[in-house]
Image (cartoon, rainbow, N blue to C red; front, side, top):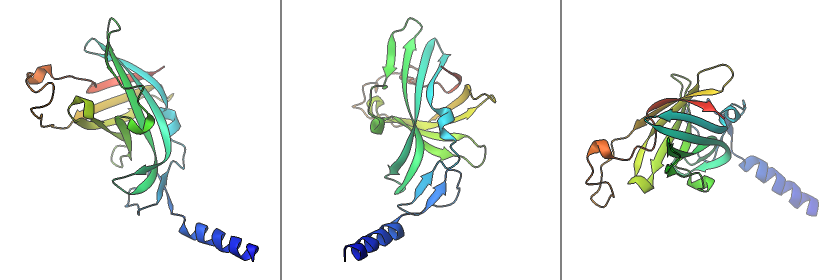
Length: 185
């Protein structure tokens, strides 16, 4: 009787298991499925990356997350998350979210784009009055030590309770560079 019960449990668990899709699958993925890094592409992006712009230095730490549930799309996926620290040229820290837990990272991967083969990430920063945007990254060299970073900020409506509501637009905080080449550290 124990063996029959065990066999039934195994059969049910196998049949309930969701289907797995590769990262570069560009069709709809059913709920509870798994978009998996089957070609092991994401580890090349992992590590600390550095670049400078407008008298600032940015350090971006990228990490691969596996089997992460996407609350919007309702499926599991392998993706990248990123945390960053920005300093001025004297080392004064301007922005730093590197100590956040991984599930609170302000930058999360969305996947590879079919059109240009770039990896897409979404940036949402509740600490900066819900600033958000899209980041596209791709390698610029065959050794994968140079990373092209392109950030496009969304048009965010600034609410009156935002700490920089009264600032002139050119004085809004700029935590991320628009276009930069980052070097792997």
